[in-house]
Length: 152
Image 1 (cartoon, rainbow, N blue to C red):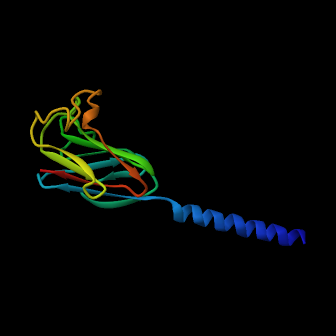
Image 2 (cartoon, rainbow, N blue to C red):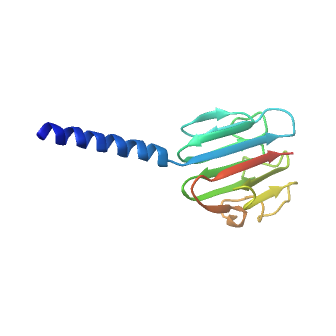
Image 3 (cartoon, rainbow, N blue to C red):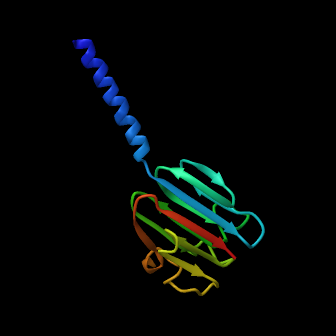
């Protein structure tokens, strides 16, 4: 009887772990670069990517994309974002050492919200120029959030 209880407990634990994996969110990231030249998408804990569409299982925190030669976006218009179950957010950053070099835009969750910056003076409502330009940040709620980023 004791061994049957252990087997049932193991089966229940195994089933719970499968449900936890199945229940994990997936976040789609699409980066389009129409400017030509290199594109870098850095996703902490997942690696570096170029332009394209990628699906990440689990949270995407502190990602940054840019269309320039510097992997950290120095001297470039960059888009920063976090995609999680709950509140996901994104923004265009021109906070030094970033600066405008190409138009950039993004939308979250198939256009639910987004921003664009087509020139160096696109304003604090569309891009961060200093760390307190919070009107440039866009947010969405819910699981399985996604982002589309376009340069040029």
